[in-house]
Image (cartoon, rainbow over all chains, first blue to last red; front, side):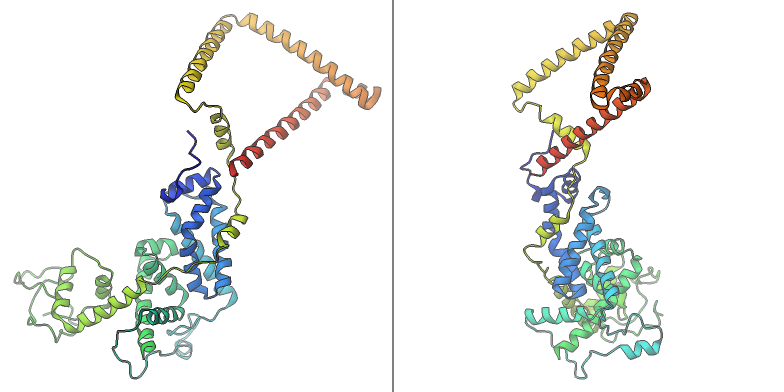
Amino acid sequence: MPEPRTLDLQNLPDADVVLLAQRGREDAFRELVRRYERPIFSLIYRMVRDRETSEDLAQDTFIKVLNHIDRYSPEFRLSSWLFKIANNVAIDYLRKRQISTISIDGSPHAASAAEVEATSFDVRAPQENALEELEARELGGAIERAIAALRPEYRSCIMLRHVEGRSYEEIAATLDLPLGTVKTYIHRARHQLREALGGERE
Amino acid sequence: MFPTPRLPACPNARIPAKRHETLTGTCPYDPPEAIVDHRHLTPQEFDLLVDGEEGFGMAPLAGHIEECVTCRTELEAQQRLVGALDKMPHFTPSPLFAYRVMRQVQVFEPWHVTAVNSIQRFVPRSRPARVLAAGVAGIVATTLTLGTIWLASRLDAVAFLVTLAAERMRALGSQAVSGFVSSALGQNGLAVSSDTRIALAATGFLAAVAISAFGLRAIAAASRRRRM
């Protein structure tokens, strides 16, 4: 039987929507864009920190995935494929444009300990205190600034872990990284965020 | 005395230091109540607690957190950070984002889906009509099957009739092509095309072009209808 035209796509799992897209249903493509436009845009936006560029890169991500939807293998999660492409697109952009993301660990391109030292900075204020109560809005802003200062690899791991709620294994598969590396990145990122937020609160 | 001697003893632990269950195994001399780890937790152990890991090896960590103020304070600080990260919202792209994406997405309906859908359009929707159509289809299929069996039992007669029909068709086709060629190219063209092989090749080529054109057009039309 042909699938009904009035099928409620919003209640279908990703795999079924993809199947309909593979059969040429345009509304299935629209549904996939509707489901993932915000997560994909958010990931890229937090990576490149420019709304217009982020929209362009998110658009590229969707076009790459949807124009090759026939190659999708249902044994993997569609979202993992999308996040993988989005992360690659953002990293490529950052590399091409040589955007100098500020790392409190020093430049990721630093070749020696001296260069690391020269390009790093300490965000901890001398009189750091332990006050934890901040308005949610301010804390949100502070977190965004602290995330912006992370290395791109740390940033994508933190986003996938905390904003998208992915497991370490899924992040490793999505970003093509060893599991141990993902755990290390997230641990370091959290550590740097705590230091940076300590500085913000001063 | 301790399983991880490089780590300092926890100064805030209320239970005095002694042999106890460790992360890597259970000391055979441990008293059963000694499940608390009397040292500060490692960063990796904090990560396990912050990530809400459960299962083997977590009880001593949780027990230590209960006893050690320093580690509990550190864990609470990490949990606050993770809680704040978990609450970070998604950003929304501009309202035209989906439109711009869909404008560049090539929606293509595979040929087999088009073919199946084209056939399914002829299937009646109501149950009685479907039953009737199935009955008619069954009668037709039975008739054709019996006819095929009958013809198979008389292969020599079938071969004769097929040859006769083919000869007749070839003569008709040849006559039509000759008429077309002589009117289009004159007598010289007719002389060249009188070669049977050239005539057959030309006819086959034209037929293939016509079938391809009609087929592609039908598929494109079906895809357009599907998209609307």
